[in-house]
Each structure stands twice: as structure tokens, then as C-alpha cells.
Length: 604
Image (cartoon, rainbow, N blue to C red; front, side, top):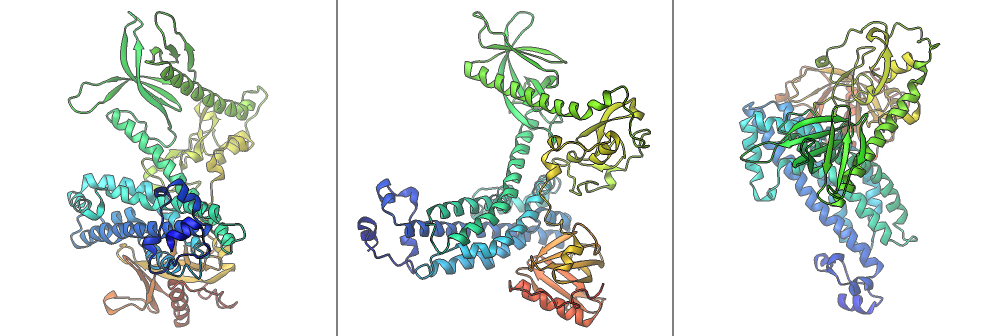
């Protein structure tokens, strides 16, 4: 019947229940004639079935990360203290919540729907309902750079850590892939949902019952995918920098978030003395050109930096002749080089890359010149402010973990610390990309934060000069506590403590917003503009403490999921009862309603 339906396009449709594997069709394996005869329903089914099969494979990868890698390392850290417990938690972030969501909710929903596809052929409603929970990926993606740094550090620092990871990697289920490769899977998964859903919508008729739900799902998933795509691009950019860093033997400080690798490759350098050609290696960044020579090594090719030429002030000129073809001249403040390409195409690629880099740099300088032109006017008087008239007392970098402007965490690779030369605050590169003339430094231009720039210059920088960081997407945690509490399912003060974190009881303000009824936000105070932490509640189990927990506080309760256990203590029995009821329902994924007015602020 299936073959008949394909070949004759009869009105009957094959049953999809019980024989899904034999019916599942891969578009790539069919001939063009067979593809053209597939009905719309069959094409839609194929995409939905592909989503199910890839989801199964993805859940198995999440199981590997959470239940194998993470569990093994946690057991070692707790039993023998071979390495800090915080290291393991920092590496795997909220992977247990992600695994629980997919394994307990999304995958079962897809399996059930595919089993009843004959009577209900749609997936858009499922994805629309569950897509908001993909917000939990934001925490994982945001932590990914730090997680990679921790893995690399402790693979070198701890022999036991390295032994456990290598032992698991050798298992057949790992597929000869490293821990880092598996950790990249969650970052890549959201963009894959987006691609499958776009294909699904493309095949779906506009009047299909599932079209509106699928369209809404795509909008929600596309937002989450943007975060992942940005992280992937950022990681790829850093991976290129690290590769060049190793190529130079770790002797050149190029692994910096402001650096961008434009082009690299072998080229011939013409001697200024006798015109002979020498094999050299060029590495072009957005702000400099590194002229490198090969090092003599028995194993592996390495290069040493012979000259650094700033893009600022760089000039490019073709110098080809009949006797010496395919040559061009690069001249800068530090040095001039006459270079020869091996082919015309290679020469054209280098010239285009260098010219584009120079032009982009000149455009950046022109923008800052426009901003600072008033500083060069003779009758210009700096704003009446002590700022910039004397050197600030800088804050110690080691005492600061977050940028004092944008509140983003620092790390040694992608988010380095900088001092604002006007106020002394420790800020990130994006928050200190402005320059202003400071009187205490002989009126020379110095790196300052945007607030000091506005005070010193008298006007804020124009929107055209601001990078995307000035208009950055709001963090998931940037939900003002007072606003969230006004429209909340539940909110109050509670004391809390995390099992194994090594910290005692802390008082905080807890909110479950009405528009995110399955997420618990933790604030330091009811007026904070940014939450300290968010906890996706789905999959958590709520219970009272056991005797082994040794709780010294009254009215205590706890929520547990996989390796994470959080203890809470309310100010009264009634508040304890209502919190346990709300958290229990949220853990089961049930719809929550706002607590009646007058009951949602107990404990303030």
C-alpha cells in the first residue's frame, strides 16, 4: 500500500502507527522522481520524524554529560576531594536541568505525538508550549567559555580529573569524541531546532491547522537560537586565535576579545639587499600585521614574530614588474615589507584583505575624531568636574569578579579586566572602549568608561559610535525584582542554602513571575534590578528535610533534581505550606495561577 501510494498518488495514506521505522523516509536517500511524488503529509511526517530521531540522539548525549561525566567527577570530588566540587559545578552549569527537560518532557511528548500521528498530525503545538523553557540554555551558553577554560585547566592540574575524563572518553558510547565536543552539543542544538522547524513550515500548507502554532514556535526558538549562534561564532573566533597562539609558541599576546583574525598564510618576502625571496608567514589581525619567520623544530611547525606593523598608519601599494611579478608593498610605522605571492589569486586575496582592514580601521578613527573634535578647539573648556584632574585610586582587580558597569563576569580569555583611567573602576573592554583626554596625564587620550566619557566630554557618544554591547540583549536575570513581584505567582523572603556549596544560610527575595510560572528568581533585595540566580523548576521534587540533613532552622523544605539540592526556610508554617505547594506544581510542569492579593508578599 505504501508503494502504491507513492507511485499512483492514491487517496489512501499509510498507517504510521506500529511501523514508523519502515515508513520513515530520508529525503536525501530518495531519487528525484520519488521525492516529487511524496505527498505533503508524508513530507511533513518525515521532518517531524527526523526531529524525533535527532531528539533521541541528543538526549543520549545529555545523559552522557549529566549522568556519566558529571556524576563521575562529582563522586570523585566528594569522596576523595581530588579537585574542588565547585570546579565540576562550574563546568557543567545547569546541564542537569537541560537533561531533565528533554528526557522527561520534550522527548516523551514527541514520541507520543508520533505514535498518534494518524489522528493528530502536528508538532507545532508541542513546541509552542515547551519552547519558553529553552531560555534555560541562556545560562549554559553564557557559562560555556568559562567551562572550557576550567576543563583545560584541570586536565593539566589534576591527574585524577584527567584520568576520569580519558577513561569515559575511551568508552564506545562516547564515539571517540572528547568531553569538550560533547559539551558543545547543547550550544548547537537550538539552531538545529530552528532549521528543522523552518523546513517544517516550508512544507506545511498555509491553511494547515498546525501552521500558526509552528510559526509562533519558530519565533520563540529563533530568539533562543540567536544566543547560541552568537556563542558559536564567538567560540569559533576564539578557537582561531588559540590556534595562532599555539602556532607562535605562546609568545605573542593575541588571545584577546578585541582581536579578530582576518587572514593568515605563507608568503614570500623579497630581501631589500639582494632581492632574493624568503619563505615567511603573515598573520593579519584587525589592528596589526605580524611578520613571522619559521623556527627550527623537530616536531611541529612553529613561527617566531620578526616584526609587528600596526594597521594604524599602514599603506598598501602594488609593486609588480615584468621581472618580479605578483608583488606588493606593505609599509607601516614600524617597518616596510615587499612581498611576493605565489599566484595572482593569492596576491589578490591578500591585497583585498589588507585594504579592507585598513579601511575599517580608518572608519573607526574617523568616528572617534568626530566625537573628540571639540577637544581640539582652542576656546573649549573641559566640564567643571574634578574627574580627570587627578589620578584615581584604582580598585584591585582581584577584588572584582563582575564588570562594574554591565555586571558581566570576567574571565581570562574573552572578558578581561580593564581600569577606567578616570574613575578607577574595573570594567570590561566593551564598557571601556571610549577615550577621553585627562588633565593628569598631560591631556593625553586614555581609556575611560562610558559614564566618565560623558562627564568629561560633556555629551554622550553618538549611537553610531557605540558597539553592539551598548545595545546588548537584556540578560535573562535582568528582571527587576519589584516589577516581577507585582505580577507574580508567589514572592517572599526566604532563607536558602545549597547542598555541597560550602556556604551557610543566606536571606534572599524569591519571586516566581506570572509570565514565567515555572522559573524561580533569587534576588538580594526586593528592589534589585538583576537577579542573582534563576532556577528552572520543571523536574524538581519538593520534600521536607530528612533527619540526615540536620536542619537547624524551623519551617524548612527542600527541592532536589539530579545533583542539585536547595534548602529553604520560611518565617512561618503557612508560608512554608504555600511555597511547597507552588514549587511542587511547578516541578510537575502544571499551570500556576497568581496567589490572591494580600497573600503573595508574606515575609516582607
